[in-house]
Image 1 (tube, one colour):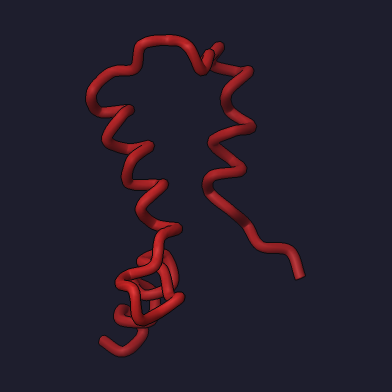
Image 2 (cartoon, rainbow, N blue to C red):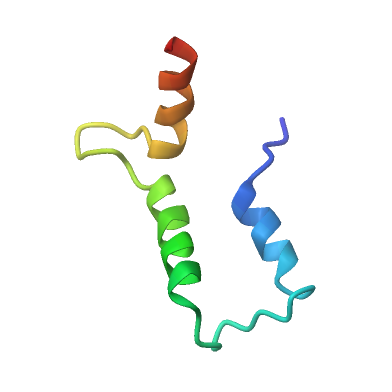
Amino acid sequence: MGIDRMDGMLEDMQPKFNLNIGDELMLEVKEFLRLLKVLKEPLHKHTKMSLHAFVPRIMAIK
């Protein structure tokens, strides 16, 4: 089953926008990349569920 991952799409955009890893990033870009990283981390030490999985579940309950 293929999963459409946003981080993969962002990596695909890198050559189009000439984004180099060594370039100094704007504050907004740094914060966005930090948020992407946090999405993959577990919510707390007692679960393996990430924020990326948790938010859609909560929205479905609503």
